[in-house]
Image 1: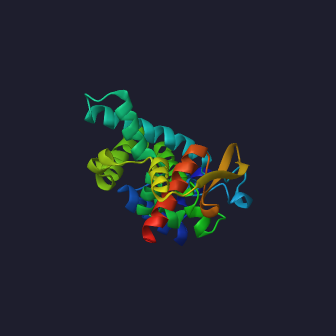
Image 2: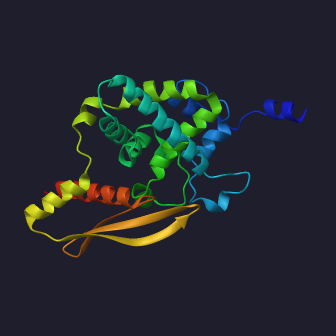
Image 3: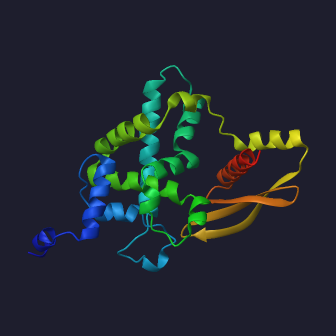
Length: 242
């Protein structure tokens, strides 16, 4: 009886709007709305998180694995004569933090994300990319692997990724930045200014400075990713100021 009543309980206006938003993203009606809500609940909203109201970290873990597997299978079939090194590099270009950040914004996840951080802090962290992976995890739990695989192929890769561009893309921003600094005869330094735990994960805040002057800071679980991202931010900043 309790289960029947819960099914018959009408959705609130907010839930109806949220359900329609998720339906527009997926192209079909979602099942378990609570999963998708959890996907956008960042760990920084800790005061609202309890045993029954979890952050998106578990779904992110799952989504990361599912996304990686689907992309790997797609590339394996698309490039039958390419070696493991090429396939690994292409997969990295599709699922790296910057690309997931961009995809998350394209899908409107920046609006849905619940986090106790301001816009600048969100932009300088992996929160948007984490939400994208968590969304994939939620979809997998809700609808299963085959539906998730089709969504990734049809609504992510085919609609939002240009493989020709990715094939030519140089994503080694640290190397690009180093060459630029050598050309301009300037000194630069990457400095870890903060190391702290966010739940079970360690977060690194990396600062990039030029001639002793701070240019940008980026936070990530991987120090290498943080260094690449902060180099990209500074390169973009320098390009705007030219």
